[in-house]
Image 1 (tube, rainbow, N blue to C red):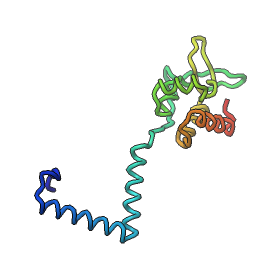
Image 2: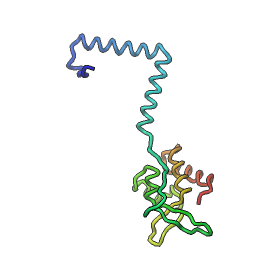
Image 3: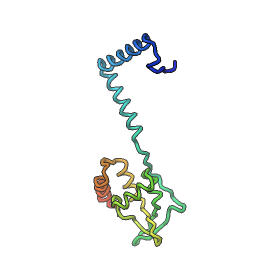
Image 4: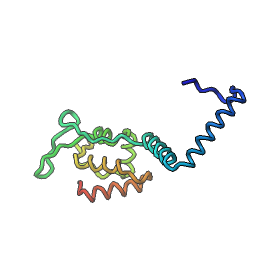
Length: 155
C-alpha cells in the first residue's frame, strides 16, 4: 500500500482523483442502506472500545489484602480498599473522592487503625453499579449506588 501523501504536496490530477474516490464512497454510503448500517456499527464499536472501562470482579482468596472477620454470628472475608479500587478500575484518588462525598456507603468493617475493609457482596454491588453506570454526576451516581445496595440488601 502506498504511503499517504499530504494533500498540499499532491498534484492537481492526484487531488482530483482523490476527490472523485471520496465522492464515490459518499454516494455508495447514501445509496445502499447496508453500507450505511455497517459504517454506523463500525463507528459505534470504535467509540465503545475507546470509552469502555475495564471492570473485573475476581477477588483474591488469601494474602495480606484478605482477612476473616466475625460479624455477629457469621465469619466473613473482608477485603482492603485496594481490592475494591482494582475491581472498579478507578484510581485511589477517585475512590477517596467518592468516600469523602458520600457516594460509597459505610464500609463493612473498619479495623483499629481506621483502615476500611469491604465484604464480597459490597464489592460485587459496586462493580455492578460501575458496569451499568448511567449517571456521570456524583449525586446521581450516589442515588444509583444506594438503590443497588437496597436492592441487594448489602450492609
